[in-house]
Image (cartoon, rainbow, N blue to C red):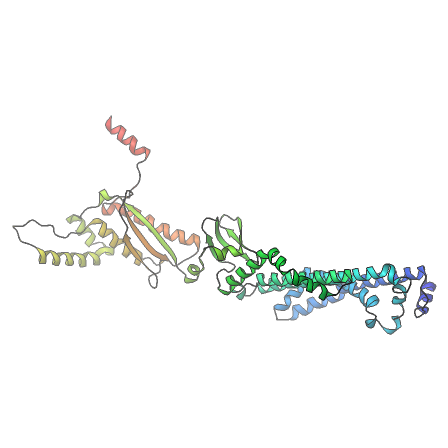
Length: 434
C-alpha cells in the first residue's frame, strides 16, 4: 500500500484520470484528515479556549465555554477541512494542488458522483454554521442573564428573532446550494411571498411587537410577581421569551402566557410593592352592632389610666366637657350631651397600637383605621397600613399578630365580633327552651 500511495503522489500532477485504487486511497486520506481535525479541535483548541477564558476577567467570553457551542464548533471542523482540500484549492498548499483535485474532480468523475457530494458538504457547512450561531446566541443569553441589567432589560425575545432570521437565511442558502441557483434568485422569490409570510408568521410578528413593548415599557421582568385575573396566573415570572412568558404559580405549577396577551389584557405586577419595601394590610373586624354603647364611668376611669389611651382620654374628655358646657340648655330642658363610646375608644386604641408597632411603616405610607358601611354582617372596622417586610411568610405573621391581639382585646371594650349563628347556638336555644 505504501508503494501505491507514493506512486499516487508522484502522479498528482498527471492529467490522466486516477485509477479506482488511487481514488480509494484519496478518499481514505481525505476522511482521515477530516476526522483527525475533529480530535485535534477536542484535544488542543478546546483546552486552549478554556484556559484563556479562565484567565480572562471579562464575563462575556464565558459564553465560549458553553458545551453545545464547543461541540458544534468541533463538528464543523471536518467539513471545513473537506471543503478546503477539495473545493477550495486556493487554500491548499502548492504541493497538494494537483493531488486531491485530480482524484475527485477529474473529467471522468467530476460530473458524475462527486459534484452532488460537494454540494452536500457545502450545505452541511452552512447548516453547522447556523447551528453554531444559534448555540452562540444561547450561550450569550445565558451569560447576559447573570448581569443585574438582565432583570430590567431581558434580551431573550430579541435573540430569538435573530436566531429565527439566521435559520431562515441558512435555509435559503442551503436550498440555493443544493439546487445550483443563486441566493438572489430565492431572495427575490421571498419578496413575492411577503403576504403569505405575513400570514404564516402572524403570531411571531405579534409576539415580537409585544415583546418590544414589554421591554421598552419595563412592564415585566424575570422575578416579578404578576397576577392575571381569571387566567389562573398568580406567581413569579421565571422566563420572558419571544412567544411566551412563563410564570411559576405559588402552588409550584407552571403557567405559560402568550406574550401578546400581556399587552392586550390587563394584569397586575407586584414589583412596585417589593421595591417600596411595604406590603399593604387591608382587613376588617366585623363588630356586632348590638354591643356598641356609651362608656360607663368606671370604664372611663379605667381607660384614663391605661397607657395607650391616657392621652386620648384626657384630650377627648376635655373636648366633650367644653362642648357640653357651651351647649347646655339649662336644668329645665332635657338634652343629650356628647359622651364617649366603646367603639370610638376602640378605634383610638387600634390607631395607637399600630403606631407603636415597629413592624409597620410609620412614615411615607398610609396608616389609618376607619368605619365602613354597616350591613347585615355588622359594622366593619377596617385597618389600613403597610408592613415593613414584604416576604410572604413574614407579612402573614405580622398581619396575624395584629388581629390576634385585637380580637382578644375586644371584650375589654364590651364589644363582640359578629358571626353567623352556628349549630352550637341553635343547640343552646333548644336547651334553654327545655
